[in-house]
Length: 129
Image (cartoon, rainbow, N blue to C red; front, side, top):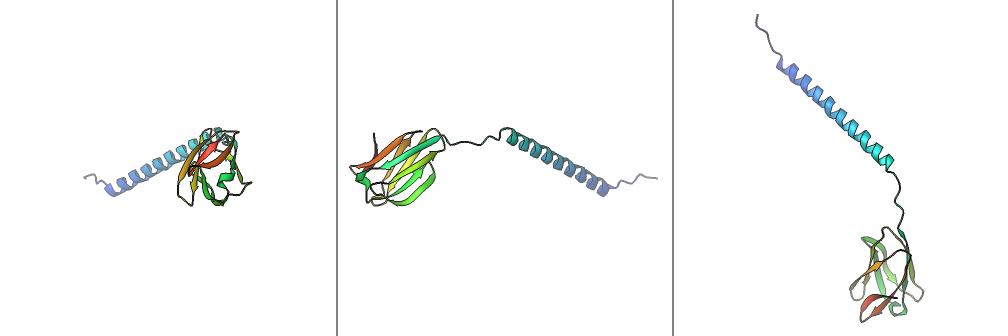
């Protein structure tokens, strides 16, 4: 009597075992990733705080201010007493100031704990000591 192979049943059993193996691998990697997140779960603290003062030469101007790639304020109408207190996300940060009337972009470097004063000289916004 010839031995009859049931290929459909063998195929389905093989696919079922493969599916359980894939699910097992996914579960193992998920558990490992959660464990490493928990172990290194210290929250990043801001690097520091910097105060940005706007000088009298900027009073009456409308500015858009960015820190790195984040918008801090849009269309800030500068007065004599305008200032921004900024939490720096890293040691070295760039302050991007756009003068809305001229469309000029000024890129300035910020450091932790500094108080910087922005002034307008020759149409450009610069940091004065």
